[in-house]
Length: 359
Image (cartoon, rainbow, N blue to C red; front, side, top):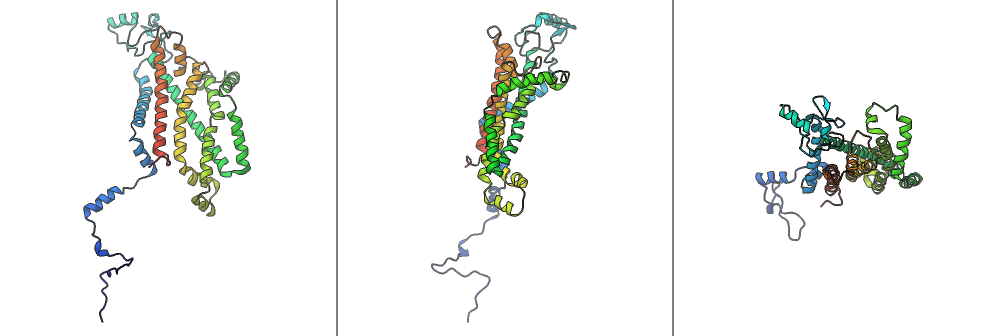
């Protein structure tokens, strides 16, 4: 009687579903290393960033925004002029420094240079009040970017909380909360800014003088209040729609069956699965806020002088557009670069992080 060997698998019979191990060849060490490299582990964020940096327009927008940030941070440390400082030579105001063209000096500055003094050049020229125009554009860009980023954070937090509550609870609560959103949609934002600026100027005008908030003025404070009151409704609707499509998935029902509370389910299970859409919407909210601030400053409802913003500088340069067209070109170019860069970055983030568009 023959005994069956245990050190070797039996051969597969004809029409059998068993696997014949003799037909397989062990992988070499080089093939194993190659397989490990091909199957390198990654995360959602790393994979999205890798795809983002493969898009030339998105990379170009990141480079432009990085250069703008470096300029507005380090330029005031290098340029020896203030945004509200009138050009002076030898301790007295230089009245010949009005409306200088880019990279030119006034008559008194040329005399001072001939005497051996070192005078920093006016890169963008000067304005009608003998103030350096380059540093005013730098501070205007700083104000516009700060408004855009701060407004997008306000919209993100309020819209995220409101939309999460409405979408997760649903029913009558969702119906009432969405009707409130519809009412807010009908309110005109420009009229609200005008009304709030008038009210805040009478209520807080004297108490804010001499403070940081007093420098930007009640118009900007009212703009932030309007962003907090009106501009979050789009984010709230987006978050609500995402939560309505996710909250009945199996992993959410499993977390609910294990006793997890609504707050934990929303923060740990629902929001991480729609964070890409929220992230993209927040990035696209920044240029919208900057454009709104520039428009309101252009019509005189933005920052109060002498604090500049890009919209305020464009409005101030409108009167001398035929004589000094470069004064309008610099702030207008700054607005275009910022808005276009954030829009291209938002499109790149959408293509890289949106699961519906990923292949």
